[in-house]
Image (cartoon, rainbow, N blue to C red; front, side):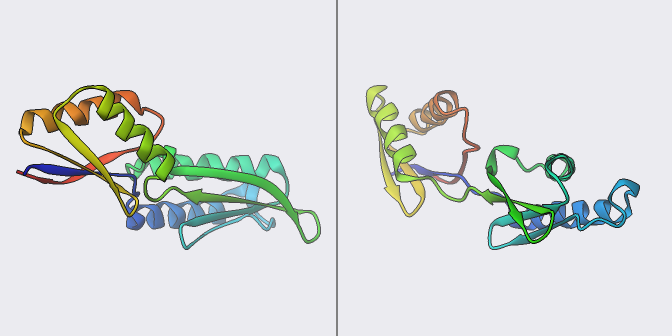
Length: 161
C-alpha cells in the first residue's frame, strides 16, 4: 500500500554550520569587539548572548541570514523570551522545532478526513504517516497539507509505492 511520512525536522548539520558561521562573523565584526556577544548550539537549542536587546536582535538577524544561506527554513525557530543573566548581559534561547506535535497532527488528520480523499493518516512518534491505494491520491494529499498548513515547515519523506 503506497504511503509517505509528513515530518517537521531541520537538517542539524546545516544548522550547526549556520551557527558556526554566525559565531565566526560575530568574532570578526567591529561593532561586537570587546562585548560578550556569542552564539552556541546545544541539543536543538541555540543560545544568543549579548549586552542589550539591540545586540541580540543583530545576532539573531545574522543567524537568520546564515540559516537561509544553508537552505534552512526560519520557521523551524521557536524564539523564547529575553532573560537577564549576570551583570548587564542578556540571553535569548531559540528552540528548533523537531517533530509534529500531536495537536498539529490531529489538525492535519482532520483536514485529510474532511477532504473525502481515499487516504488515511496516522500519528507515529512525531511523524504523520499517510497511506492510500493510489499514488495520485497521496500526491493530492501532499498538496492539500502544504496548502492548509502554511505556517509549519513540513516536508515529506519515505514515499513508498
